[in-house]
Image 1 (cartoon, one colour):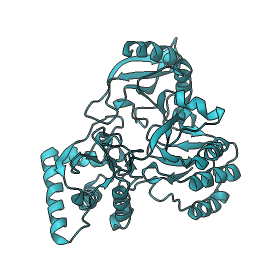
Image 2 (cartoon, helix red, strand yellow; image 1 turned 90 degrees about the vertical axis):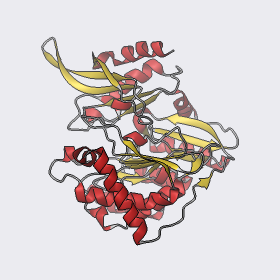
Image 3 (cartoon, helix red, strand yellow; image 1 turned 120 degrees about the vertical axis):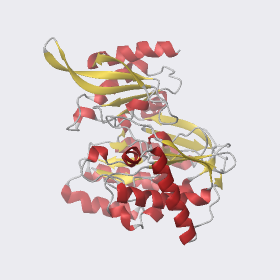
Length: 408
């Protein structure tokens, strides 16, 4: 698998086409996969083809560095924050942070991954409460800073670091937080190696005091760029939101989308829910094969047992069962998240409706089941979902359909 980092989910049509063309040539028959961190994955690339794939990506100014492993992952940004009237365009700030952190020596010695998100307004679309560092823009151009949250088998949401935080302090704060994590993070037990675990080990008060001390030192030792959050453009509107089944789209469909949208000067964005957002000034017609995606419910599913050795349930099959029940049904933007095991890769523990795979005996035979969670805040606030029941995998479609009637 080759994961391609798409900063802030902003990708040009030539770049989009290049990825699709590489997939057709080197991974025939395999769909492109859009992740919940605004990346694109190519699967089933042979070892022999990897150099050619990397060369093709470089030609399109695309890269895989930092998209996976123990590194600063792709910095996420609201897909349309540069176009919302009441938000700020935070992509320039996110790019500055990502590029600066990649020049720090500690980047090659992290004990675990480190996730940073930027939300252009108070809606907090990039899920700061499950980020290592999450920055939420306020109407006055200052920021609320949330951080040290993560999910996994024992979820714990982040805490408030600062209110009314100046934009100019964001870059030095990211640097000192990363250095603090590199120096203090767990190295032996990967299950206890995230930034959140440093906080839990030290206690919130000592943890925050150390971060603040390091920030003041960094500001005293050198000058930092004077950053002013960029104003939004506001001249384009959201035309379509396409919800890709299980985050997948065939390379041929990707090219069909480009053929339909690029001549109309439509802007393409990847969101954080396995979806594509299309912005423009005039409506345009989608190909029939893609038009139906606009009616899909928001379902986020990891592959589960289809490819993951930890997977206890087939999440994509469960998602298909739910989708079949809910297609063309208004779900009021509720998010349904399906994880194949307690690691919570699909963020089920903070979902409106979450499913976590498990195995239970049914008539004496080990059978796929899901633990059901409801009432989470999708990482946009302090609300964890609550466990309510355990259901057989074959019943997930009917169960979710029944459950949603209660939301109507």
